[in-house]
View 1: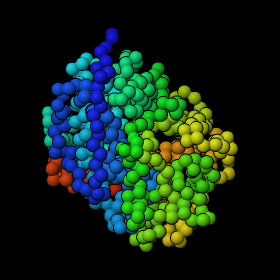
View 2 (view 1 turned 45 degrees about the horizontal axis):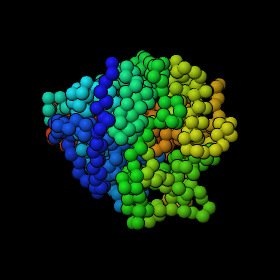
View 3 (view 1 turned 90 degrees about the vertical axis):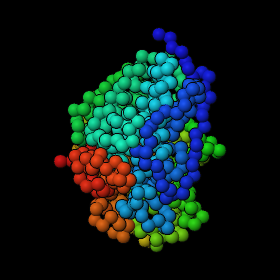
View 4 (view 1 turned 135 degrees about the vertical axis):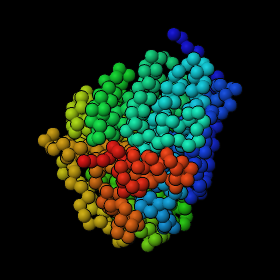
Length: 531
C-alpha cells in the first residue's frame, strides 16, 4: 500500500546543547511524566523529535557525553583515563558521588528526552498512518536504553511513560532484554514490509532516510544484545543471534552501512572533541587515552594508532597512555605530555560498525557454536580488515599474519604508575587449534581495538568475558574501601540516591529481588554473572 510521506516538508528542529560544569546536578527521571509536546504542526514535531531521539544514544550534549562515555564507559572499558588532578571522587577511583554515577538515569538528556520524543513520534505516526518513523524510533530507543541497563542492571523500562506516572517500577535486567528483543523484532517487521519508504534525509542524520540500512542496524544491534546474554541465557541468545544473522534484511557487513550519527560541525562540535580537552590549560585536559589500549596497539605495531591518537609530547615516545585508577594528585601538571584522542569537531559519532558485527559472528561461531553463516576464522579476519578499511590504515595482511607480537609492558615515563606485570600473551594471527577461551580472548581483543571509542561496549565485553585483559587500579588509586576488586574493576554503577528518596518502594524492591547483590560498584549485572 502506498503511504503518504509526511516528512517531505518537515523543518528539522534545532537541538539544544548545554555546556554545563562537570558536577552539575541532573534532573530526576521520575519528575518527568513523559508527555509529548505540542503536536499541532506534525511535520515540525516529527523532524525535531527524530533528531532529539538520536541525541540520546551518545549524547550531543558535551557534558552528558563526557560523563557517560569519557568518564564512565571509556575508563571502565580501557579506552580513556581521567587526567584532571583536581578530582577527588571519580568512577575510575571507585568512589564517585552522585554527580558522576547518576548521569544515565538522572540526566534530562537521556531517559526523559528519549521518552518525550518517542511519544511525539508515536503520535505523529498514528496520526499519519505511517508506522515507519516509530519503528525507527524503537530502534533508537533500544540503542540508547541498553547502555542505561548495562550500566546499572535493573532499570525502570516497561512502565516508563504509561499513564503519566511519576514514580516507576523497575524491571529485572532479563525482562528489560526481553523487551529489547521484542521492540527490535517489531521494528524490523514493520520496516521489512515497507523497504521503499524514505525519511527525508534532514530528519535522519544516521542513514539519510534509507530504511534498508535501518533494518541492517536493527539486526546487528539484535546480534550484539544476543551475544551479551550468551552466558546467562544461552537458548535465548542462540535464537536471537541466529535469527538476526539469517534475516533477509541482512546485517551491517560493510563500512558504508556503519551506524554513525553525522550531525556535527564546527558550530555544533562532536562532543568528544571538546570533552576530552576540558581544563586543558590547567591540567592538560580531563581525559587522555588509557595505557591499556596503547600497550596493546604498541605491541602489535598497529597502524591504526595514527588514526586514533595524537602523538605524545616526549621526544623518544610516539604513543603512551595514562594508567587508569591512579592517585592523580602526584600527576598534576604532567598529564599534558601523554597521548590524546585524535578527533575533529565535525567527525561523526559512531554507534556500530561492520567490524563489530564480524567479531560478534566470530565469537558466536567459535565460542558458543551458533550458526553464524560462516567460519569463525573468516569472520575474525573480516573484522580486522573492515576496521583497517574504516580508518584508512595500511598493512592489514602483515598484521593478520603476526603470530608473535603481544601487548607491551606499561612503563610510565613519569615513573609513578608503571606496571611490571605481563598484560596479555594473546597474539594476532588466528589459531584454529586454540581453546575456546583463547579464541574468545583473541576475538574480543581485536573487537575492542576495532570498536574505539565505544567505551560502554568495551566495558560490557570486559565484564562479560574478562577480555581484553586490562591494567588493575593502583593501591592508592582504588578508593572504594574494598568494595571493588582492582583486578576486576567496576562492575556497575550504583543507583542515584534520589531514587531512594523519590522512588523508594520501587528501587528497594529492585535491589532486593533483581540486582543480585549490594547496590554498589562491585556487584555484577545479570548478564555478567558466572556460576
